[in-house]
Image (tube, rainbow over all chains, first blue to last red; front, side, top):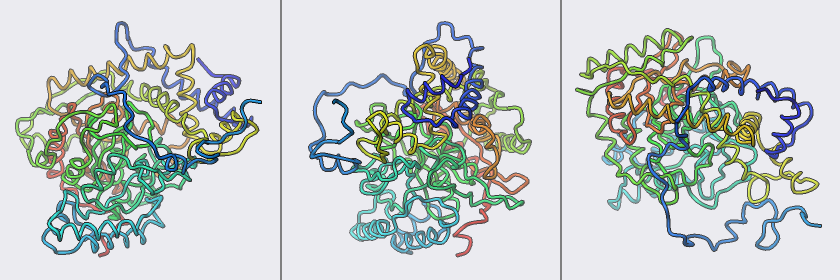
Length: 95
Length: 491
């Protein structure tokens, strides 16, 4: 499997990263080198093997569905690039 | 004062030989002298450090001296510190001042540690050289005879350089694929990646959540054990935090290896490994044998698939974790014509080349039509790697390998393509994938005078055996060499 320039642009779009046209050929080469390298996994027999998603040696813990934190909008909004009142502000989405 | 170990400094503080303020001032002076050259710190918190040192002296005077009272350390700039800017080495977090404290840094603070500053790192901890930091490269305090400037390794390269150059007595690191152990090896210090779940991930800027683990870096095995004792423990705010008792790691360092079975995996003899590293590995085997351990050949047949698994799993998790950097709630923003344009411009300007590459690989391997072929297959091979370790640990108590396939390389070397750089992590990645603890111990110098480390891998939650083996290696190796750029050597 090898990526073409259109696929590189599509991935960038999915990842929400703006690409300039002159970045595409370099990324195409680098991404293909990485994908070529990981290709060797296809030689491993994984028939019947259960996928391992994490390093933890335990089942996920359940917790009480309760509010344990919050109530300080100023702290939360202190790092916001833009705000209106107690809200994060973004460019207009709905006309 | 700067050459003392943490254990020695704690004794001296207890005996009132010097105060925490004096110890901290000496380290601040070292930071001021060496940091302009080495660039190990992104942010120096000298005023905060002096305040904390004063408080430590006052507390000791009042008869209250917790485990690390008055010990100056460096905090990797991946741990959120309340009120102190936290960048993760990225432009996108350049304006970010966390409103909360990570669990590990809070525990160290509660134990009386003094924070000298936030240590430089590869951007979002993605790298093996510290070259991807948006805040400039870190120089390794060790120099090669040809005078080339060397990398300190990565991603915890600033932490490693600070400890090696005697700017800090210890440091926090994080290790997703070798980011504590490889820089420890490159700078002649010790560092342990504990078992996954041992240290809380709460408040650590996330890279690959199923692999990320915090750990200490210091100049001795015992110092790492002291630091890890303070950093460990259950935390309800991290859903993968292990509810396990914290053993006496420090005591374990002196246990010795008599009667222990040490595994030597043949698969770690990779093509192109420097003969010196092979030789050092053999020396390590001989030291442990002489100390009473039994050496056993073991097989970890899927070792060679560790890197390809890692370079699917880690980018996949990163692409998801880094989706939060959108210029809306925190971090830098670049305005756009509409919301999507704002996201795309913010992320294009805020992320460096390596981070973009990994996000894109991760996005691709998780995308419709490719998920099974890449991500699911990688998770299955990951399961086989865990099985390899479990089978080996049915026969042995710990495994001995080299930490990295080479000594520190020069800034600019190994930069031709991303895959060459990735090969640095060939010996370290498998323990992250399996979640087992692993430690690097400085064991010798190569022909060009550069430090090399040996790695000890242990069973899940058996850091005590790792410390016992690492302690035995440290005693046998007698590593006392100093880097060329070193504050302690002059005083």
